[in-house]
Every structure is written in structure tokens, then in C-alpha cells.
Amino acid sequence: MESDKADFITLAEYNGLEKAEMKHYVRYAPSAETDGFYRIGFLGKISNPAVNWEGYLPTGNYFLYQLMCVINFGSTVVSNLLPGVDFSVISVILLVIGYILGILIRLPIAILLTVIQFFVVLFTSKQAVS
Image (tube, rainbow, N blue to C red):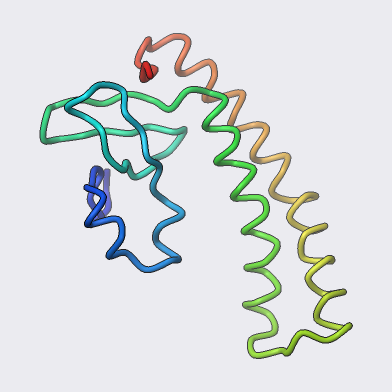
């Protein structure tokens, strides 16, 4: 990956992460020696360089990750546009609008990426086995 973040971390390292960074990791155990937290890459690619292992998340898990991204998109849009707004009726309405935007904009992208990931996993035979 072209990132300075670790592809594979232990539970202690995961607990030391900031909350915003935790959402990019998933706990997965394709085998006993590769049990830990993996940074989710493009199309659900995960790897553990320590044991020279790489693969893809199962398509169902990847779709759930994409749904989490849809929900985070809506709340991130509102919090970035209006930082420091208290929880009043207006902020709740704006949050609902943010979730609607998340569904309208991010959900089609999530579905498209999940379909592409399904075919990548199907043709590369690198799906992680749990």
C-alpha cells in the first residue's frame, strides 16, 4: 500500500489508535498466525507482511464495511460543514439531510465497489478463508 499506516496491527496497537483511525481496520483471522487487525485497502484487500500473506475480505464483510462508510459519510458531511453546532432541532434536521446525502451519493458507490470486489475475488482466488 502507498500509506504510512501499518497493514497489520495487534490488539494492543489497535487500542492505542484514535477513534477516527479505528474505522479503517477490521479484525480478521484467516488462520491462527494471521489473527489481528488489518487495514482495509482498495476493494477489501488485506495483508500481513510479517507472514507474507495477502487476500481479500469476503464480499459480505466488504459490503458491511461499505455500509459503515455510507453512514460515516453522512455524519462527516454535517460535522465538517457545521462544526460546533449544538444538538438542537436544526442540527438533527441537518444530520438527517446528511444521512440522506450519504444514501444518495455514497450508497451507489458502495454497491458498485462491492460488485467489482466480488468479481476481483472470484477471478483472483485470493479471498481470505475464515
